[in-house]
Image 1 (cartoon, rainbow, N blue to C red):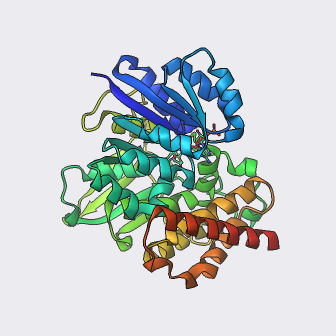
Image 2: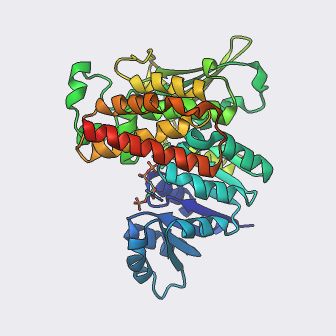
Length: 388
Ligand code: NDP
């Protein structure tokens, strides 16, 4: 029987890897919705290749180009936030959530209401609204499967185990583009330099977030929200080889590690085949060639984002939404060349400080409250950026 699948963020790095896997087993899937942003040519090409029912661009301004590119194909073209929600409402058994940023939350929540499987690459959904996402899944009998490589690794190391016997969860970090740079030089790092990852081939925003370790900061929060593990049991270590993605330590002192090549098709393919395992076209590691695995503690001066993540986890509530929005605004400003690399963490810290009086920790988490906190934090971040 074919499975109905939809991919939100189909034109991005995760989206392309997902389509690569689906393309290798075409008869097993019916593609329902593919969505993208500005890359309309790619979206139309994918929609034609995979015979999608509907293709949606997030931007109204791109609608004309998409409609034109799909004319005569019978594939529906649509644009805007409401169209993304309508696409998420089309019956699908499996949905990939791979839009980048907080914009991924509403379609992910809508897809969960169908009670199918949500493969979650969009970590921002958990960071901004973890309890809402997990409760929505529970209320509708839907499954959420992690696609972030570290969280897929934790998920696999936890399979068949009792969560109450977990003593610690260790997620690994490559250390990003600047792990060898002298700290004083980080101030001068350019966007092009930050956009090149030593091990992984990913979208630009997550690559820059890896260099600053804002990505790891989001992942610490994601670990807390997804697995319900208390922050004091979650650690990040630098592992430059990026071959061990995470380890789970149990009360008997044993550690179960997940080891694999740095290829997102493993985590995506695991979520696609779950609960079974199927062969995947990823490299098989030769451990005798790998030789050794190294680890070290991340330097808090080099990676201040990790300290901020601890604060956010302690506060809880809407602190994640504020943190993520301030980070997204700071990242936009860095990419636009308006601020320096190290200023991103300064700006996020300042926004958290400014908004700490807003009772973030006690606030109810609804789509509306998350949106409000997000908008407020972006506005504050932009004020701080303008003063820099
Ligand atoms: P990309 O930047 O490569 O792709 C992002 C996708 O989202 C594109 O399809 C883009 O469209 C679309 N998009 C951008 N802005 C919006 C918006 N405002 N509304 C709707 N759609 C939008 O990102 P990645 O694939 O790298 O990452 C996607 C998610 O997965 C992120 O949350 C990231 O943190 C997470 N992730 C990524 C990993 C990776 O290996 N890349 C690893 C683990 C997690 P277009 O390009 O057409 O403008």
